[in-house]
Amino acid sequence: MYDSNIDLPSPLEKTYKMIVDAFPNGIEDSEYFPLLGCLYDFMCDENLAIVIAKFTKKDYSIVLNDVFRSASTDKPSRDEIDGIKVKLSLFGFDDWAKNIDIPN
Image 1: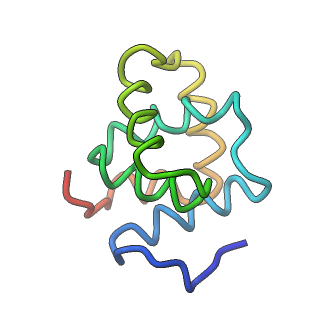
Image 2: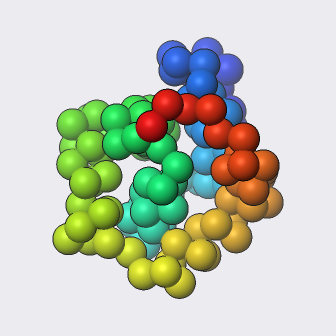
């Protein structure tokens, strides 16, 4: 469930809400790196790590390292990323991706 009291910079709130809506029971291990890989093309590393750290309640530095890994050693396949896009599309991903105003 979306928590409107979450402490995020306002440009990241839409991203956080989309993730909360798409993953109401949390992110499965098998979806974690594909989610990072999917959002990596649209967000700077730091902002992506901020949002995912808030959602997963993991330490920011660990998530930032995972973001780097999602673009290198643990890069998900195109099929895995496409599966995440389908899931996110039900919660506004296409509009979000077209209108993203988060500085890269």
